[in-house]
Length: 494
Ligand code: NAD
Picture 1 (cartoon, rainbow, N blue to C red):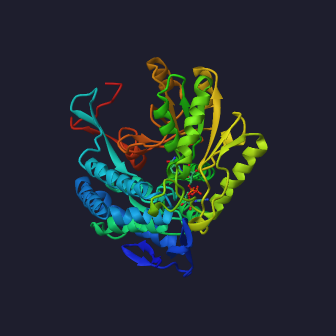
Picture 2 (cartoon, rainbow, N blue to C red):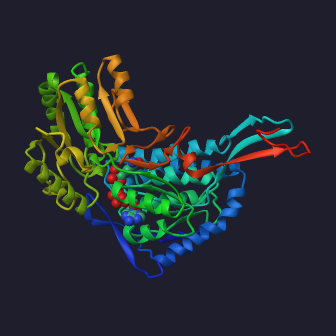
Picture 3 (cartoon, rainbow, N blue to C red):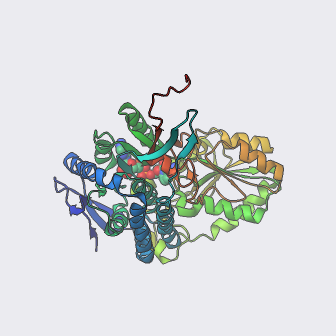
Protein backbone atom coordinates (compact mmCIF):
# COMPACT_ATOMS: atom_id res chain seq x y z
CA UNK A 1 0.00 0.00 0.00
CA UNK A 2 1.38 3.44 -0.84
CA UNK A 3 1.87 5.97 1.94
CA UNK A 4 -0.27 9.06 1.40
CA UNK A 5 1.81 11.96 2.62
CA UNK A 6 0.94 15.64 2.88
CA UNK A 7 3.07 18.74 3.12
CA UNK A 8 3.90 19.60 6.73
CA UNK A 9 3.14 23.26 7.29
CA UNK A 10 2.80 24.89 10.71
CA UNK A 11 2.63 21.47 12.36
CA UNK A 12 -0.24 20.20 10.20
CA UNK A 13 -0.39 17.95 7.18
CA UNK A 14 -2.08 19.30 4.09
CA UNK A 15 -2.40 18.63 0.38
CA UNK A 16 -1.13 20.96 -2.36
CA UNK A 17 -3.50 23.83 -3.11
CA UNK A 18 -3.76 22.42 -6.64
CA UNK A 19 -4.46 18.91 -5.25
CA UNK A 20 -1.87 17.60 -7.70
CA UNK A 21 0.27 14.68 -6.58
CA UNK A 22 3.43 12.76 -7.47
CA UNK A 23 4.08 9.05 -6.98
CA UNK A 24 7.32 7.59 -5.73
CA UNK A 25 8.11 4.09 -6.98
CA UNK A 26 10.18 1.21 -5.67
CA UNK A 27 13.19 1.16 -8.02
CA UNK A 28 13.52 -2.62 -7.62
CA UNK A 29 9.94 -3.11 -8.79
CA UNK A 30 8.09 -0.22 -10.38
CA UNK A 31 4.74 -1.90 -9.76
CA UNK A 32 5.17 -1.06 -6.08
CA UNK A 33 4.03 2.53 -5.48
CA UNK A 34 5.76 3.58 -2.25
CA UNK A 35 4.13 6.94 -1.73
CA UNK A 36 1.84 9.62 -3.09
CA UNK A 37 2.86 13.15 -2.16
CA UNK A 38 1.73 16.67 -3.07
CA UNK A 39 3.13 18.35 -6.16
CA UNK A 40 3.40 21.70 -4.44
CA UNK A 41 3.05 25.03 -6.18
CA UNK A 42 3.87 28.61 -5.23
CA UNK A 43 0.94 28.96 -2.80
CA UNK A 44 2.11 25.93 -0.81
CA UNK A 45 5.69 27.20 -0.70
CA UNK A 46 4.49 30.65 0.37
CA UNK A 47 2.54 29.08 3.24
CA UNK A 48 5.51 26.99 4.39
CA UNK A 49 7.91 29.95 4.28
CA UNK A 50 5.41 32.11 6.15
CA UNK A 51 5.03 29.42 8.83
CA UNK A 52 8.81 29.20 9.23
CA UNK A 53 9.11 32.96 9.42
CA UNK A 54 6.42 33.22 12.10
CA UNK A 55 8.04 30.47 14.16
CA UNK A 56 11.51 32.04 13.98
CA UNK A 57 11.35 34.67 16.78
CA UNK A 58 10.28 32.20 19.48
CA UNK A 59 12.51 29.34 18.28
CA UNK A 60 15.62 31.45 17.86
CA UNK A 61 15.27 32.79 21.40
CA UNK A 62 14.60 29.38 22.95
CA UNK A 63 17.82 28.49 24.80
CA UNK A 64 20.00 26.28 22.60
CA UNK A 65 20.21 23.51 25.24
CA UNK A 66 16.41 23.35 25.20
CA UNK A 67 16.35 23.14 21.40
CA UNK A 68 18.96 20.42 21.71
CA UNK A 69 16.82 18.40 24.12
CA UNK A 70 14.18 18.07 21.41
CA UNK A 71 16.84 16.95 18.94
CA UNK A 72 18.12 14.42 21.46
CA UNK A 73 14.60 13.03 21.86
CA UNK A 74 14.34 12.85 18.07
CA UNK A 75 17.60 10.85 17.95
CA UNK A 76 16.21 8.36 20.48
CA UNK A 77 12.96 8.02 18.54
CA UNK A 78 14.69 7.52 15.18
CA UNK A 79 16.95 4.88 16.71
CA UNK A 80 13.93 3.05 18.08
CA UNK A 81 12.39 3.08 14.61
CA UNK A 82 15.61 2.22 12.77
CA UNK A 83 14.50 -1.10 11.29
CA UNK A 84 11.25 0.24 9.88
CA UNK A 85 12.95 3.33 8.46
CA UNK A 86 15.90 1.33 7.08
CA UNK A 87 13.54 -1.00 5.23
CA UNK A 88 11.68 2.02 3.89
CA UNK A 89 14.95 3.52 2.62
CA UNK A 90 15.67 0.28 0.76
CA UNK A 91 12.15 0.09 -0.63
CA UNK A 92 12.01 3.70 -1.83
CA UNK A 93 15.64 4.38 -2.77
CA UNK A 94 16.87 0.88 -3.63
CA UNK A 95 20.11 0.66 -1.63
CA UNK A 96 20.59 -2.74 -0.02
CA UNK A 97 19.21 -3.21 3.49
CA UNK A 98 22.48 -2.91 5.48
CA UNK A 99 23.02 0.41 3.69
CA UNK A 100 19.39 1.44 4.26
CA UNK A 101 19.97 0.88 7.98
CA UNK A 102 23.28 2.77 7.70
CA UNK A 103 21.46 5.71 6.13
CA UNK A 104 19.18 5.91 9.16
CA UNK A 105 22.11 5.42 11.56
CA UNK A 106 23.78 8.45 9.99
CA UNK A 107 20.67 10.48 10.79
CA UNK A 108 20.83 9.24 14.38
CA UNK A 109 24.54 10.05 14.66
CA UNK A 110 23.97 13.56 13.37
CA UNK A 111 21.08 14.12 15.77
CA UNK A 112 23.15 13.06 18.80
CA UNK A 113 26.11 15.11 17.64
CA UNK A 114 24.06 18.25 17.06
CA UNK A 115 22.17 17.77 20.33
CA UNK A 116 25.59 18.04 21.99
CA UNK A 117 26.21 21.31 20.15
CA UNK A 118 23.31 22.81 22.07
CA UNK A 119 25.69 23.18 25.02
CA UNK A 120 28.78 24.07 22.96
CA UNK A 121 28.40 26.40 19.96
CA UNK A 122 31.14 28.47 21.46
CA UNK A 123 32.41 31.79 20.19
CA UNK A 124 35.47 33.73 21.27
CA UNK A 125 36.14 36.06 24.16
CA UNK A 126 39.30 38.08 23.62
CA UNK A 127 40.95 40.92 25.54
CA UNK A 128 40.25 44.49 24.51
CA UNK A 129 43.06 46.96 23.92
CA UNK A 130 41.12 49.38 26.15
CA UNK A 131 40.36 49.21 29.86
CA UNK A 132 36.83 48.40 31.04
CA UNK A 133 35.78 46.98 27.71
CA UNK A 134 35.25 43.42 26.55
CA UNK A 135 35.08 41.80 23.14
CA UNK A 136 33.38 38.60 22.09
CA UNK A 137 31.96 36.82 19.07
CA UNK A 138 28.72 34.84 19.25
CA UNK A 139 26.93 32.61 16.78
CA UNK A 140 23.47 33.80 15.76
CA UNK A 141 20.96 31.94 13.60
CA UNK A 142 20.54 33.00 9.99
CA UNK A 143 16.73 32.91 9.81
CA UNK A 144 14.61 30.73 7.54
CA UNK A 145 16.56 28.09 5.68
CA UNK A 146 15.50 26.23 2.54
CA UNK A 147 16.86 22.69 2.67
CA UNK A 148 16.92 20.99 -0.74
CA UNK A 149 18.00 17.36 -0.74
CA UNK A 150 18.73 14.56 -3.24
CA UNK A 151 17.44 11.00 -3.27
CA UNK A 152 20.60 8.98 -2.64
CA UNK A 153 20.70 9.42 1.16
CA UNK A 154 17.00 9.96 1.72
CA UNK A 155 17.08 10.14 5.52
CA UNK A 156 20.74 10.95 6.18
CA UNK A 157 21.03 14.09 4.05
CA UNK A 158 17.81 15.69 5.33
CA UNK A 159 19.09 14.91 8.85
CA UNK A 160 22.51 16.44 8.04
CA UNK A 161 20.69 19.68 7.35
CA UNK A 162 17.72 19.64 9.73
CA UNK A 163 19.62 19.04 12.98
CA UNK A 164 22.38 21.65 12.70
CA UNK A 165 19.90 24.17 11.29
CA UNK A 166 17.51 23.68 14.21
CA UNK A 167 20.02 23.51 17.03
CA UNK A 168 21.45 26.80 15.78
CA UNK A 169 18.02 28.41 16.07
CA UNK A 170 16.91 28.58 12.43
CA UNK A 171 13.52 27.49 11.19
CA UNK A 172 13.37 25.46 7.99
CA UNK A 173 11.46 24.48 4.89
CA UNK A 174 12.64 21.13 3.57
CA UNK A 175 12.06 20.14 -0.05
CA UNK A 176 13.21 16.55 -0.43
CA UNK A 177 13.76 14.82 -3.74
CA UNK A 178 10.48 13.79 -5.30
CA UNK A 179 12.04 10.37 -5.96
CA UNK A 180 12.32 9.61 -2.21
CA UNK A 181 9.82 11.87 -0.46
CA UNK A 182 8.42 9.26 1.92
CA UNK A 183 11.75 8.64 3.67
CA UNK A 184 12.22 12.35 4.30
CA UNK A 185 8.62 12.77 5.41
CA UNK A 186 8.86 9.87 7.90
CA UNK A 187 12.07 11.26 9.35
CA UNK A 188 10.61 14.76 9.65
CA UNK A 189 7.45 13.40 11.23
CA UNK A 190 9.48 11.77 14.00
CA UNK A 191 11.51 14.94 14.54
CA UNK A 192 8.37 17.03 14.65
CA UNK A 193 6.70 14.73 17.14
CA UNK A 194 9.74 14.95 19.42
CA UNK A 195 8.35 18.32 20.50
CA UNK A 196 9.06 20.98 17.87
CA UNK A 197 6.75 24.00 18.00
CA UNK A 198 4.56 24.28 14.88
CA UNK A 199 6.28 25.97 11.95
CA UNK A 200 9.86 25.24 13.04
CA UNK A 201 10.18 22.35 10.59
CA UNK A 202 8.06 22.47 7.43
CA UNK A 203 8.11 20.25 4.37
CA UNK A 204 6.91 20.95 0.88
CA UNK A 205 7.09 18.15 -1.65
CA UNK A 206 7.39 18.64 -5.38
CA UNK A 207 9.63 18.58 -8.42
CA UNK A 208 12.91 20.46 -8.39
CA UNK A 209 12.33 22.49 -11.53
CA UNK A 210 9.12 24.04 -10.17
CA UNK A 211 8.82 23.69 -6.38
CA UNK A 212 12.59 23.75 -5.82
CA UNK A 213 13.25 26.74 -8.05
CA UNK A 214 10.44 28.74 -6.48
CA UNK A 215 11.60 27.90 -2.95
CA UNK A 216 15.26 28.71 -3.63
CA UNK A 217 14.35 32.11 -5.07
CA UNK A 218 11.80 32.95 -2.36
CA UNK A 219 12.26 36.39 -0.79
CA UNK A 220 11.32 34.98 2.62
CA UNK A 221 14.29 32.61 2.66
CA UNK A 222 17.53 33.75 4.31
CA UNK A 223 19.71 30.78 3.44
CA UNK A 224 19.82 27.71 1.20
CA UNK A 225 21.46 24.43 1.98
CA UNK A 226 21.50 22.31 -1.18
CA UNK A 227 22.86 18.87 -1.97
CA UNK A 228 22.54 17.51 -5.49
CA UNK A 229 23.98 17.74 -8.96
CA UNK A 230 26.61 20.30 -9.92
CA UNK A 231 24.39 21.81 -12.61
CA UNK A 232 21.57 22.60 -10.18
CA UNK A 233 24.01 23.60 -7.41
CA UNK A 234 25.61 26.12 -9.72
CA UNK A 235 22.21 27.65 -10.46
CA UNK A 236 21.34 27.78 -6.77
CA UNK A 237 24.64 29.38 -5.75
CA UNK A 238 24.21 32.03 -8.45
CA UNK A 239 20.67 32.72 -7.30
CA UNK A 240 21.74 32.91 -3.65
CA UNK A 241 24.50 35.39 -4.41
CA UNK A 242 22.22 37.56 -6.49
CA UNK A 243 19.65 37.67 -3.68
CA UNK A 244 22.09 37.98 -0.74
CA UNK A 245 21.23 34.63 0.77
CA UNK A 246 23.62 32.42 2.71
CA UNK A 247 24.28 29.19 0.85
CA UNK A 248 25.99 25.86 0.95
CA UNK A 249 26.00 23.61 -2.13
CA UNK A 250 27.35 20.06 -2.01
CA UNK A 251 27.47 18.48 -5.42
CA UNK A 252 28.85 15.74 -7.64
CA UNK A 253 32.14 13.90 -7.85
CA UNK A 254 34.43 11.87 -10.09
CA UNK A 255 36.33 10.23 -7.32
CA UNK A 256 39.54 8.24 -7.90
CA UNK A 257 41.14 5.37 -6.04
CA UNK A 258 44.88 5.09 -6.70
CA UNK A 259 46.31 1.60 -6.30
CA UNK A 260 50.10 1.72 -6.06
CA UNK A 261 52.46 -1.18 -6.81
CA UNK A 262 53.19 -1.61 -3.09
CA UNK A 263 49.51 -1.73 -2.06
CA UNK A 264 48.01 -4.54 -0.06
CA UNK A 265 46.26 -5.92 -3.12
CA UNK A 266 43.54 -7.85 -1.36
CA UNK A 267 42.58 -4.79 0.68
CA UNK A 268 42.68 -2.57 -2.43
CA UNK A 269 40.44 -4.90 -4.43
CA UNK A 270 37.88 -5.04 -1.62
CA UNK A 271 38.02 -1.26 -1.24
CA UNK A 272 37.67 -0.66 -4.98
CA UNK A 273 34.69 -2.99 -5.17
CA UNK A 274 32.91 -1.32 -2.27
CA UNK A 275 33.83 2.18 -3.48
CA UNK A 276 32.65 1.56 -7.04
CA UNK A 277 29.58 -0.62 -6.56
CA UNK A 278 28.39 0.13 -3.01
CA UNK A 279 25.04 1.96 -3.21
CA UNK A 280 25.10 0.90 -6.90
CA UNK A 281 27.64 3.66 -7.51
CA UNK A 282 25.03 6.25 -6.56
CA UNK A 283 27.06 8.11 -3.94
CA UNK A 284 28.56 11.51 -4.53
CA UNK A 285 31.77 9.96 -3.20
CA UNK A 286 31.53 6.72 -5.25
CA UNK A 287 34.83 5.59 -6.75
CA UNK A 288 34.18 6.02 -10.45
CA UNK A 289 37.85 5.89 -11.45
CA UNK A 290 40.50 3.35 -10.48
CA UNK A 291 44.04 4.48 -11.25
CA UNK A 292 46.23 1.40 -11.07
CA UNK A 293 50.02 1.24 -11.21
CA UNK A 294 51.20 -0.65 -14.32
CA UNK A 295 53.38 -3.00 -12.28
CA UNK A 296 50.43 -4.61 -10.52
CA UNK A 297 47.79 -3.81 -13.15
CA UNK A 298 47.32 -7.38 -14.45
CA UNK A 299 47.14 -8.88 -10.96
CA UNK A 300 44.73 -6.21 -9.77
CA UNK A 301 42.43 -6.66 -12.78
CA UNK A 302 42.33 -10.41 -12.39
CA UNK A 303 41.35 -10.22 -8.68
CA UNK A 304 38.92 -7.35 -9.30
CA UNK A 305 37.07 -9.28 -12.02
CA UNK A 306 36.93 -12.41 -9.85
CA UNK A 307 35.50 -10.45 -6.91
CA UNK A 308 33.02 -8.44 -9.03
CA UNK A 309 31.59 -11.61 -10.58
CA UNK A 310 30.47 -12.73 -7.12
CA UNK A 311 28.29 -9.65 -6.58
CA UNK A 312 24.59 -10.50 -6.54
CA UNK A 313 22.38 -7.97 -8.30
CA UNK A 314 18.82 -7.66 -7.04
CA UNK A 315 16.29 -6.30 -4.60
CA UNK A 316 18.06 -4.90 -1.55
CA UNK A 317 15.35 -6.32 0.71
CA UNK A 318 16.13 -9.84 -0.55
CA UNK A 319 19.81 -10.17 0.23
CA UNK A 320 21.37 -8.63 -2.90
CA UNK A 321 24.85 -7.04 -2.85
CA UNK A 322 24.01 -4.42 -5.49
CA UNK A 323 20.58 -2.84 -5.86
CA UNK A 324 18.79 -0.99 -8.65
CA UNK A 325 19.28 2.49 -10.11
CA UNK A 326 16.89 5.04 -8.62
CA UNK A 327 14.73 5.57 -11.72
CA UNK A 328 14.15 4.62 -15.30
CA UNK A 329 15.65 7.94 -16.40
CA UNK A 330 18.78 7.39 -14.34
CA UNK A 331 19.10 3.86 -15.74
CA UNK A 332 18.82 5.22 -19.28
CA UNK A 333 21.45 7.86 -18.51
CA UNK A 334 23.87 5.23 -17.22
CA UNK A 335 23.23 2.95 -20.22
CA UNK A 336 23.89 5.93 -22.51
CA UNK A 337 27.24 6.50 -20.76
CA UNK A 338 28.13 2.84 -21.31
CA UNK A 339 27.52 3.35 -25.05
CA UNK A 340 29.60 6.56 -24.94
CA UNK A 341 32.45 4.64 -23.32
CA UNK A 342 32.35 1.96 -26.02
CA UNK A 343 32.29 4.59 -28.79
CA UNK A 344 35.23 6.38 -27.20
CA UNK A 345 37.25 3.18 -27.55
CA UNK A 346 37.20 1.91 -23.97
CA UNK A 347 36.76 -1.83 -23.45
CA UNK A 348 34.00 -3.36 -21.32
CA UNK A 349 35.82 -5.60 -18.84
CA UNK A 350 32.58 -6.90 -17.33
CA UNK A 351 28.91 -5.92 -17.16
CA UNK A 352 27.77 -3.22 -19.55
CA UNK A 353 24.17 -4.34 -19.79
CA UNK A 354 20.74 -3.89 -18.30
CA UNK A 355 19.59 -6.90 -16.27
CA UNK A 356 15.89 -7.36 -16.82
CA UNK A 357 15.10 -11.04 -16.56
CA UNK A 358 13.23 -13.01 -13.89
CA UNK A 359 12.83 -11.13 -10.60
CA UNK A 360 14.65 -8.10 -12.04
CA UNK A 361 12.27 -7.46 -14.91
CA UNK A 362 10.31 -4.63 -13.28
CA UNK A 363 13.32 -2.87 -11.79
CA UNK A 364 16.06 -0.50 -12.96
CA UNK A 365 19.00 -2.89 -12.82
CA UNK A 366 22.37 -2.57 -14.54
CA UNK A 367 25.11 -5.15 -13.95
CA UNK A 368 28.22 -3.81 -12.22
CA UNK A 369 30.35 -2.54 -15.10
CA UNK A 370 34.05 -1.81 -15.53
CA UNK A 371 35.88 -0.24 -18.46
CA UNK A 372 39.57 -0.70 -19.21
CA UNK A 373 41.65 1.04 -21.91
CA UNK A 374 40.29 4.30 -20.56
CA UNK A 375 42.12 7.50 -21.49
CA UNK A 376 42.00 10.40 -19.00
CA UNK A 377 40.21 12.73 -21.42
CA UNK A 378 37.36 10.33 -22.25
CA UNK A 379 33.94 11.42 -21.07
CA UNK A 380 33.59 8.27 -18.95
CA UNK A 381 36.76 9.37 -17.12
CA UNK A 382 35.64 12.97 -16.70
CA UNK A 383 31.88 13.11 -16.15
CA UNK A 384 29.81 11.93 -13.20
CA UNK A 385 27.84 8.85 -14.32
CA UNK A 386 26.24 8.06 -10.94
CA UNK A 387 25.76 4.35 -11.46
CA UNK A 388 27.62 1.05 -11.12
CA UNK A 389 30.22 1.97 -13.74
CA UNK A 390 33.92 2.31 -13.03
CA UNK A 391 36.67 3.44 -15.41
CA UNK A 392 40.09 1.86 -14.91
CA UNK A 393 43.17 3.84 -15.92
CA UNK A 394 46.85 2.92 -15.77
CA UNK A 395 49.51 4.99 -14.01
CA UNK A 396 53.22 4.71 -14.83
CA UNK A 397 54.44 6.40 -11.62
CA UNK A 398 53.14 7.83 -8.35
CA UNK A 399 53.36 11.34 -9.81
CA UNK A 400 51.41 10.25 -12.88
CA UNK A 401 48.74 8.72 -10.63
CA UNK A 402 48.31 11.95 -8.64
CA UNK A 403 48.15 14.01 -11.84
CA UNK A 404 45.48 11.71 -13.31
CA UNK A 405 43.53 11.76 -10.04
CA UNK A 406 43.49 15.57 -10.06
CA UNK A 407 42.82 15.91 -13.79
CA UNK A 408 39.05 16.38 -13.54
CA UNK A 409 36.72 19.29 -12.79
CA UNK A 410 35.44 17.65 -9.62
CA UNK A 411 37.18 17.51 -6.23
CA UNK A 412 35.05 15.70 -3.69
CA UNK A 413 36.80 12.54 -2.49
CA UNK A 414 39.93 10.54 -3.36
CA UNK A 415 41.79 7.52 -2.04
CA UNK A 416 45.17 5.85 -2.27
CA UNK A 417 46.27 2.33 -1.44
CA UNK A 418 49.99 2.18 -0.66
CA UNK A 419 52.30 0.99 2.12
CA UNK A 420 54.79 3.79 1.45
CA UNK A 421 54.55 6.34 4.28
CA UNK A 422 56.13 9.12 2.26
CA UNK A 423 53.72 8.65 -0.62
CA UNK A 424 50.83 8.62 1.88
CA UNK A 425 51.90 12.03 3.14
CA UNK A 426 52.42 13.43 -0.36
CA UNK A 427 49.04 12.10 -1.53
CA UNK A 428 47.36 13.59 1.53
CA UNK A 429 48.90 16.94 0.60
CA UNK A 430 48.56 16.86 -3.18
CA UNK A 431 45.21 15.20 -3.87
CA UNK A 432 42.95 18.11 -4.75
CA UNK A 433 39.78 16.92 -3.03
CA UNK A 434 37.83 17.89 0.08
CA UNK A 435 38.19 14.36 1.48
CA UNK A 436 41.22 12.05 1.19
CA UNK A 437 41.28 8.41 2.28
CA UNK A 438 44.48 6.47 2.93
CA UNK A 439 44.11 2.72 2.53
CA UNK A 440 40.33 2.99 2.46
CA UNK A 441 37.89 3.58 -0.41
CA UNK A 442 36.45 6.98 -1.34
CA UNK A 443 33.21 6.40 0.58
CA UNK A 444 32.49 6.25 4.30
CA UNK A 445 32.70 9.76 5.73
CA UNK A 446 31.90 10.13 9.42
CA UNK A 447 29.65 12.89 10.72
CA UNK A 448 32.01 14.51 13.22
CA UNK A 449 34.14 16.25 10.60
CA UNK A 450 33.22 18.73 7.86
CA UNK A 451 32.06 17.18 4.61
CA UNK A 452 32.34 18.74 1.19
CA UNK A 453 34.29 19.09 -1.99
CA UNK A 454 36.57 21.40 -3.92
CA UNK A 455 36.22 22.64 -7.51
CA UNK A 456 32.89 21.66 -9.16
CA UNK A 457 31.96 19.51 -6.15
CA UNK A 458 31.18 22.23 -3.62
CA UNK A 459 30.36 25.91 -3.26
CA UNK A 460 30.03 27.84 -0.06
CA UNK A 461 30.13 26.39 3.41
CA UNK A 462 30.51 22.74 4.40
CA UNK A 463 28.23 20.20 5.97
CA UNK A 464 28.46 17.93 9.03
CA UNK A 465 30.38 18.39 12.26
CA UNK A 466 33.50 19.92 13.64
CA UNK A 467 35.13 23.29 13.14
CA UNK A 468 34.25 24.74 9.76
CA UNK A 469 31.33 22.32 9.36
CA UNK A 470 27.58 22.78 9.38
CA UNK A 471 27.43 25.21 12.30
CA UNK A 472 29.24 27.70 10.10
CA UNK A 473 26.62 27.14 7.41
CA UNK A 474 23.71 27.61 9.74
CA UNK A 475 24.96 30.52 11.87
CA UNK A 476 26.43 33.95 11.39
CA UNK A 477 29.08 35.46 13.58
CA UNK A 478 28.09 38.51 15.52
CA UNK A 479 30.84 40.49 17.25
CA UNK A 480 29.99 42.39 20.42
CA UNK A 481 32.13 45.14 22.03
CA UNK A 482 30.92 46.17 25.47
CA UNK A 483 32.30 49.31 27.04
CA UNK A 484 31.66 49.66 30.78
CA UNK A 485 34.13 52.51 31.42
CA UNK A 486 31.40 55.14 31.53
CA UNK A 487 33.35 57.32 29.08
CA UNK A 488 34.04 57.55 25.37
CA UNK A 489 37.03 55.35 24.54
CA UNK A 490 38.49 55.33 21.06
CA UNK A 491 40.09 52.14 19.74
CA UNK A 492 43.41 52.65 17.90
CA UNK A 493 43.44 56.31 19.03
CA UNK A 494 43.43 56.48 22.83
P1 NAD B 1 19.46 17.02 -8.45
O1 NAD B 1 20.38 18.18 -8.55
O2 NAD B 1 18.71 16.61 -9.65
O3 NAD B 1 18.35 17.28 -7.32
C1 NAD B 1 18.69 17.59 -5.98
C2 NAD B 1 17.52 18.31 -5.34
O4 NAD B 1 17.36 19.57 -6.00
C3 NAD B 1 16.18 17.60 -5.46
O5 NAD B 1 15.39 17.85 -4.33
C4 NAD B 1 15.57 18.26 -6.68
O6 NAD B 1 14.15 18.18 -6.70
C5 NAD B 1 16.03 19.69 -6.50
N1 NAD B 1 16.12 20.47 -7.74
C6 NAD B 1 16.32 20.04 -9.01
N2 NAD B 1 16.36 21.08 -9.85
C7 NAD B 1 16.20 22.20 -9.10
C8 NAD B 1 16.18 23.59 -9.39
N3 NAD B 1 16.32 24.04 -10.64
N4 NAD B 1 16.03 24.47 -8.36
C9 NAD B 1 15.91 24.03 -7.08
N5 NAD B 1 15.92 22.71 -6.76
C10 NAD B 1 16.07 21.81 -7.75
O7 NAD B 1 20.31 15.80 -7.86
P2 NAD B 1 19.82 14.32 -7.58
O8 NAD B 1 19.68 13.59 -8.87
O9 NAD B 1 18.67 14.33 -6.64
O10 NAD B 1 21.07 13.73 -6.77
C11 NAD B 1 22.20 13.22 -7.36
C12 NAD B 1 23.31 14.23 -7.34
O11 NAD B 1 23.56 14.65 -6.00
C13 NAD B 1 24.64 13.68 -7.82
O12 NAD B 1 25.27 14.62 -8.65
C14 NAD B 1 25.44 13.49 -6.53
O13 NAD B 1 26.83 13.50 -6.72
C15 NAD B 1 24.94 14.62 -5.73
N6 NAD B 1 25.17 14.41 -4.29
C16 NAD B 1 26.12 15.16 -3.68
C17 NAD B 1 26.39 14.96 -2.34
C18 NAD B 1 27.42 15.77 -1.62
O14 NAD B 1 27.34 15.88 -0.41
N7 NAD B 1 28.41 16.33 -2.31
C19 NAD B 1 25.68 14.00 -1.62
C20 NAD B 1 24.71 13.25 -2.30
C21 NAD B 1 24.45 13.48 -3.64
